Image (tube, rainbow, N blue to C red):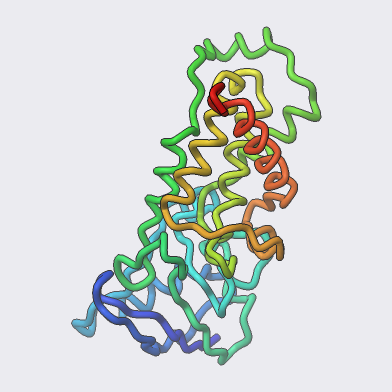
Length: 252
């Protein structure tokens, strides 16, 4: 298979960028998209040119580091996979594939396809923790949790913080990400002491980082590689309203 890759190149955050086109020939249909970028970079390096900068780590769809926009879709055309799990059989032979970084003000471009997503880290630091001692692994059996609640908490914990939800939203909203983190800990007994504070602080930091409001269009859910549902945003809204009322000063 042969492809043309139309890749966004940008030297740094302060520079203006543009698309550059590269040839990717004799590609195996079972190669991943990241592997093709590796091959293109090998050719660029041999030619004495600057290779394409892109993030990656596990290449197993676990970490979300590889996040980029492929043909206008965060993580590409496949359903519920990260960019590293997109294989070239998903494209037509001879196709021109456009690759660019996530476009969102809170995710400034560092270089080429690499963005700074530390805004998510700041949100986690604001409330993504519990203060109780969870003990050792056997101690988990001493605190019964209903199956439905446990499975829902696990569903929320699947969020890998890749930022696809932000890239897909026309308002660059991080509500799906925040709702997953708030729901994960808010459903479990260990997360109750900080439940109100968590909702208020994480939303506060989310707003301070420049993320927009939820558009209710469902674009975030559609591109989430882990299938985080919109239902969690409703849970976050309920927790936030409840926490706002309970934490209101007595003088008001």
